[in-house]
Length: 194
Image 1 (cartoon, rainbow, N blue to C red):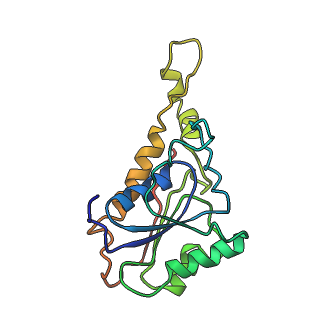
Image 2 (image 1 turned 90 degrees about the vertical axis):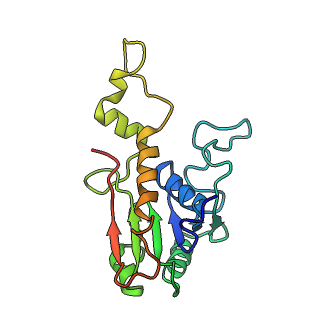
Image 3 (image 1 turned 180 degrees about the horizontal axis):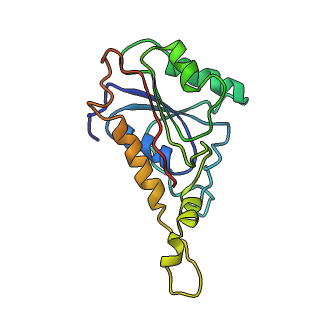
């Protein structure tokens, strides 16, 4: 573990590979990462490849706290995430997501509640909708250059998602996210797709 981001508190609400990998990477660099999930896990809880028990191999040792599992309703999770993201103090006010904007968790609402908010939102497609590695690969034609021939073959490593997740983590690295920097409010929306 590296303490590079140890002064930061990041609220994550995300799914699939890119944003959770970004959050996990930031936790490995010492940030306090608080992931908000529905009861029973997010939509990626059983993402393939899985163990014999059905748990995703992507998240077996993910670092960070999982809160919100006790909030059965979407509105409760939004309120919990908003409260954590806008809590006063240095190092907080950072939200990481790759999900479509939720009411009250969009940049304008968060900025109104906390002037120095940082919203790291990975946007999949140009219209703002989500995209995952397998859709990005198909859209780019990449499966046509893999495999033995005769038809497209998708590779197992979600390379686009891994790259996007690491880009998210670097967007929050010093000096990009100096905890006490005045006027640090910003919205960062790297795109994962074409």
